[in-house]
Amino acid sequence: MRKCILTILLHIGACAMAQPVILIDSNLQSINISKQGYVRTGNDFLPFDKFKESWLALASDKLYWLPNNTQWFYCKLKNNACKSRVFKLWLNNVQAGVTQMYLVRNGVIDSSQKTGSLLGPKQRSTGDRLLSMQVVLNAGEETGLYLKSFRRQIGITVSPMLYNVMNDNINERLDNWMIFGLSFMLIISITALSIYFSFPSKELFWFAAYSFAVLFYSIAVSGFGSLYIWGSFPLFEENAAVFLGSLASVCLFQLSRLLFNTAQAHKKTDRFLGLFNVANIVVAALGFNMLINYFSIHTFTILLLLLYLLQIVGYVVIFILALAAVFVQKRKEFILIALLFGIILIAVNILILQETGAIPFNYRFHSYMVSFSLFPQTLIPLLFFVKRIEKQLQQKGEQIMQERLMAESNILNERIRLGRELHDDIGGTMSGIKLYSHLAGSQLDAGNSKALSQSLQTIQQSAEEMILRINDQVWLMQSNSNTLEQVLQHLVEYAGKMAFSKNMDIKISVGQNITSEDDSKTHKNLYLLCKEAINNAVKYSEGSMLIFEAWQQEEVLQIIIADNGKGFDTGKEYPGNGLKNMKQRAQEIEAKLTFESSPMTGTKLVILK
Image (cartoon, rainbow, N blue to C red; front, side):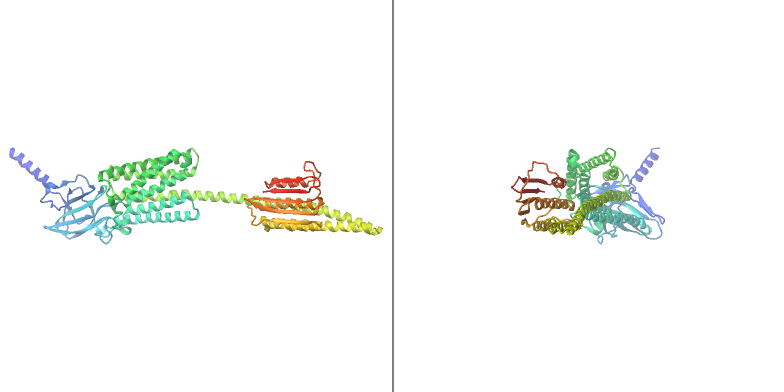
């Protein structure tokens, strides 16, 4: 009985010490070799058969590469097929450090295979993004497979998988999906940049910067960056994704602060977001820790995780601001921003849980998640800005339409007013000419030559005044009469003609470089105001001198129209609408109008605009 028990125990012990062999038959297409493997740390190559005590059996199908350590993986393969088979060993992670493969057959070691994210495409075993190595298994032979890898920073999870090279299209499809997503992000980034140059603003600048940062982050985490762009450039190494991801977060936080105007509307929140942005900058700097080696690996890992948590808090704050904008402020367009940060929060939490090992790491799932989460993270803000610009253009169009309608209405009203004035002026003048014509006929029949001469002179003067008024009205309706320089030039000509008609001397002084940003309507009212003052000075002052002066000092226009005539009492009310019209026009153009006059001292009118 004791012999039987001893035999059973020896058998169990022998089975426990027996090394598991992964059998490869002719139908096998792919298999995860981690679960039946062993691991150890150290720089030296220690064959499993001679140093079994140095190796630990894996209890799962995940292999965790510890940071700052040289690590080994071992398993035994046996090809049960009748012919040799060719496989690829895929590490299932594009950020693995330099990994070398050793194949041991019949005591002979072949160590020619090597790959890793720090190697360029020509240095990698199979020159691909997914860090695979070619494995040839001879028919009927057992082969010991060893992997040696060194990871300098933050540990990662790999799941070595052996798959038939004839099924390489599985990974090709994954590559195609990644390229598809990256292509769309490139289109979005170029679109964002073109929108910024078309409608430059701080918000669009940070959005364009964010789009390109996300694009390059996606290139980094996909493995295409180390494969085709920076290769073995030591500044980036495995931490390119850390640097670019943090850079994208900096741009996104700056964009959010501008969108929500936190500097004015939420000052305390703005200070917190500024702190989170500093955290992002620190994370970006830590991305180069492999170059400077300032922190210990454990300090680096803990600090990086704390900063990631700060990032999440920042995203939560902005997510709450977006929800408040939608539901409290009723700004429906910010539903896209709320959706954006909702997606970011989900994606970031999953990535952190995967990278910390809280949930199993699966590179295929990781790749699809990165592709399909980062793509909307750039598309959603693009849609937000397209809608915003569309709304702004619509509002601008409506504003232009309203201004055009108002301008057309003003033109129509101006034409009606000018037509009414022209009708009144011409009608009154023609009535006077008709009256004096009949009077002149009667005087001609009566032979009263002196009275006839006066009547004809009155008719001539009325006709000349009518022509001047018609010319003025036509000039006012012309489009080239809308500059202040032309208004002053026309007033000088008009003052000269009116003074000449009354044999008055004239003194003119007009300053240089007189400009104004007022519209043509203001200039026309200024012209009519000055014209009325000139008419009054010529017709009623009975003076011998007319003075017209205009100059500009510190953007203030000053016009003086004066005479040396009989003057008038400024405190007395006078019949007629002359003074009343001038005061009304001055009020319309927001000008200051003052009169300086007294009986027998002349009159001085001052306009300040």
